[in-house]
Image 1 (cartoon, rainbow, N blue to C red):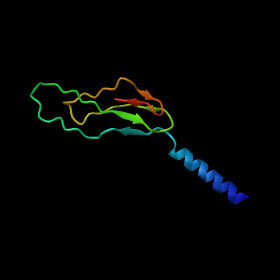
Image 2: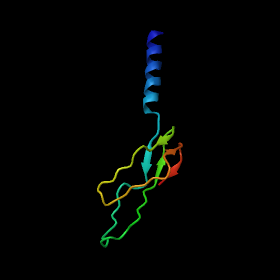
Image 3: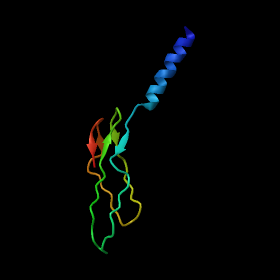
Image 4: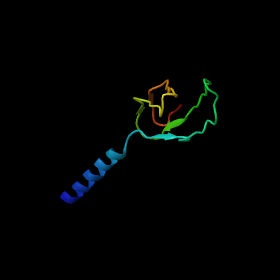
Length: 83
């Protein structure tokens, strides 16, 4: 009986460890081509929360100073999409 309880407890802890929010992007890279100096380009990355709990976006970083990342919403429910 003690071994069965240990196995059940281990499975429950494992399930909790794998539960949570999971973000999946439609694409991870994009080539915007050649842009003229001082021109603007709007690039949208779409994503979906494929997890089973709310996804909270706390911070968005840019790879360089020439881009300004922006997100209008911070919390996405399971199954909800955003950009």
